[in-house]
Image (cartoon, rainbow, N blue to C red):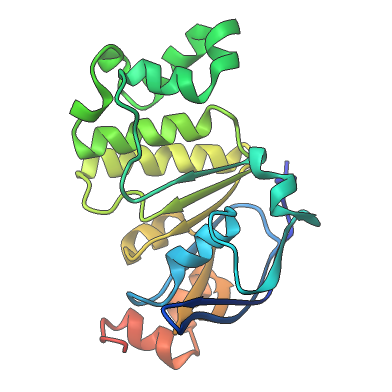
Length: 236
């Protein structure tokens, strides 16, 4: 079933930071279910765009609608996983309980199932901040998925992680997408994008310069900046 937050429409989005336009007139429509990967060089504005989608940053100009609604009206239907895990000074299980108090009260076993899905059930009573980086990120994803979000945003969520954790997180993301959640992730990893993406959005210098099906992007991109990026060239 397609996500209730589709289509996603971004119209003439501008964001100014330090007197510089870091997003300069972004126009983007995402209509298809599945996994959209946002790619582009460092400093292109990818993460800022994702934060605008989640309502964490208010743009200076422009409009975003999710399923024809404002972001503020559908915040509870979204979840986001950041590059650096944000965890409470509590146990692994308590981090889930705090994020989903109703589930903790009515169906606590569901929390353990969530930990089992990310191979952390045996760490339930350990301090969350004592986990390895990969384990912390798996916990962050488990927490994000508890609400069964209609839109899941991931910002370089597997950067610098061990291969086993990357494999597990990618598997969970695919499974969540198959259940109808729209997934948008920022990734610099071309291999990961090839494995996961149905669609690629390429951002350069604060603008969307290409949006295309993943197979077309990787085999027949016509955008000079995207072709240079795929060839490993440094874009300034």
